[in-house]
Length: 262
Image (cartoon, rainbow, N blue to C red; front, side, top):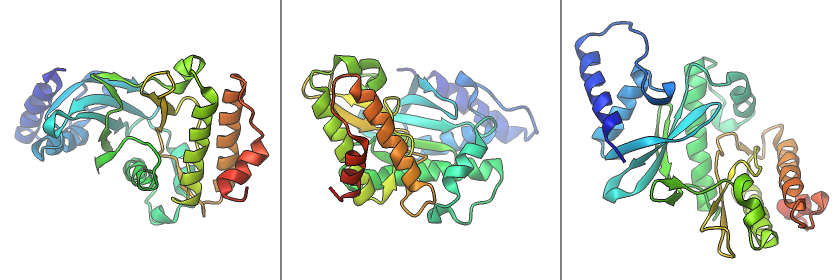
């Protein structure tokens, strides 16, 4: 853990307040911090959400995630969406049709801001119905702060990396399907990108291993025109993966179970 990034942020914010130029975006680790993002991050520091910040946890197509500490030394994950290079066409496809975002403007900045809010709201809804997700803390502009899942500064592994080490893959699969059903029946949500890439394995690879759903920003409500198509894809991805470990999975039966009709 280091506060090197904060020192850079503090120094840069001071300069930006003194000389308001249309300068090139200030860039530090992973090329994600433009001037407005730096200012938003600094506001979150001043509000006490962040007390120290470490290095990068992961780098994705749309966002980077950094490790940080919050109140009472609590581990945090800070997800920062890149405004200039995100896939706006893909984001728009998931936002359009969601009544929560009916009035979205179609500028790049607005889409990324709404996407960040969407992930925050989806995490809230998932947590409320008993699905294990990183607890959402706060969102501002293109920044989402949530609970860090892992030990020390080491994040929990993705299912894709440790699935073959699970002692009881069938039980793990059952919990994944249970979470998917809770999302659908109780939260009126479909994850819409569920796979071994977006599930963390918490608690090791033994019998106490538990799934954690992540990257839920693309999740849609059931009245989205593509909700059922996304659900079928989610179930197909999960069944395809767990069949490799001998888990019996009939996709149509699982779909009926998720919908509460089995």
